[in-house]
Length: 356
Image (cartoon, rainbow, N blue to C red; front, side):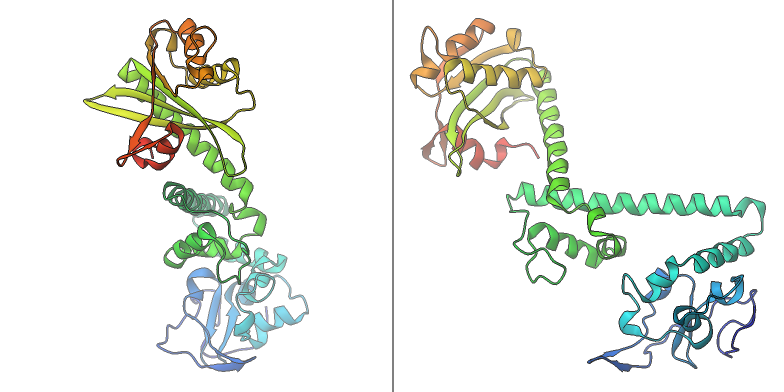
């Protein structure tokens, strides 16, 4: 294929792409900014080669392996005249990205890889398999960053969402800004956070809630395993309202394991029925979900002294005892740092009661 000869870049398909690494590249005034070529782009786009003579980028694959050239500006820039609009170089819909997604470039790139790896053991199928493995590895690194960012904000009780989460926002919220910080030090995360479509970045509230729900199941499963290992356990519960005035039941399991007494907080359960029947049903339902043998292993229950909880004939304590005859009842309030708090507040305040 004929193309303009430029002395300082590859002349034939057996030559390596010209990729000089300079201390400083020529600077151009583009728009209102001073811009230049960046050597980091070599790692992101293996097909580019840089001409110092032209101060421009060319596509090695298209120059040597294209079957035909489509007559448009993008092709001529990367094949004949050179591309040097550094402002648009990393645009999602222009520059390098636009060229790399074009049909003619994809075909030329595959032909180049096939030519480089003419050994049967390095066929196109082998290359595609290796590329797939690389993508899987990068995706795992990225989703790992998402999960760990959520775990960090959850453990430290930080709000996830920001008022304005656009890319140019000065404060996009704790979660998004933490992801940007991780991406600053991890190229795989940073590139995906920038280049992936908005609906594939795993940062929307639905994905966050789904991941947090999975974490919750993992924590509850670990608590259940500990309780089963401990054998006997007690249940502590109290009712309170959240900031929206929604009635909710807080449930804590108390057990002795490996020389230590643990109080593990299971969570807040929204509850509409505040009768003894409703509360006891919620408590037993939570124990059932954890597959705990409360009929034989539940040996204690602790609630406040309200009649709904402590009533001798129809109270929650009586109904739980009917199901678990060993579950002795006592009035419970927890001392937190020298002050008395209802159980739900103490469980929420005391981080040691919540397994990470």
